[in-house]
Length: 314
Image (cartoon, rainbow, N blue to C red; front, side, top):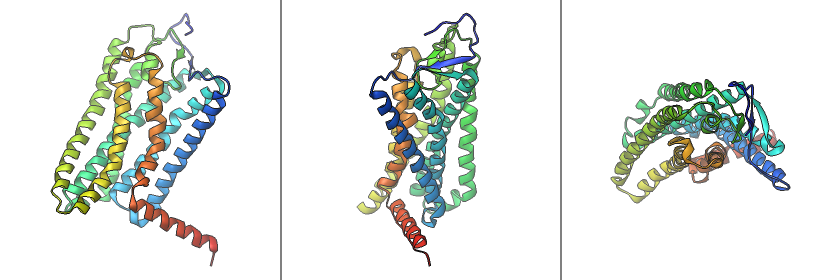
């Protein structure tokens, strides 16, 4: 990494991934395809939920909010990933770098809280079915969704502001976007205190939500096992399986990167794991939520029939 003589650098250098020869265009095209499919898949879910009356339930409302979030989440980092794959080491202004850092972590924290709200929705639907629609009214849905965004963007202020005020003596970021651990390695001062604060804030937020989700699913499991028929138990489990898969993908990768000391992992590991939660998870979410979902498949069929009817004309 390149050293500079002052403690404020106007530009950072994103190292990205080291690809040469034929691998570079292949990696670029593969990433671009995944990115475009991610945008198309999440946009399709949003349109489907808001145009089909059969999906006008709290569960699908929160899924559409998650899809909307994923559009921004994936678009925060993939453009710089594509640029580094195509051009190699790429400069990024320090202001843009810190904005990317803040927005990425704000959206990540928002998703963390939103996954907790979605678990609460499933708990109320299965364990409190008689009071479900009263408890989860449209007003409550909008309030809960808005609260996740406010909480996420508020919680990310602490790690982003602490990192943004550090003095930097190095400028090459060993990542394809501006993230906490790679940036802290460039600082002129000891960042162990900052790392502990980051770990505490992110660890408490994600940890509390994860414990909440586990507790809610323990309650769901107990309620499902008391259902009289195997068919009703299978239906209840099927409504939760997609959410549990998304939770497992998101939390496994997030805990690996953000909970613990940044220096405890080999340099370059973070950007490989980041591909899971910053690119792969947003890509898989639409597939996970539609592949085994009979209601979504029926809504897709109804939408296809309407489109065919409109194309035929009167």
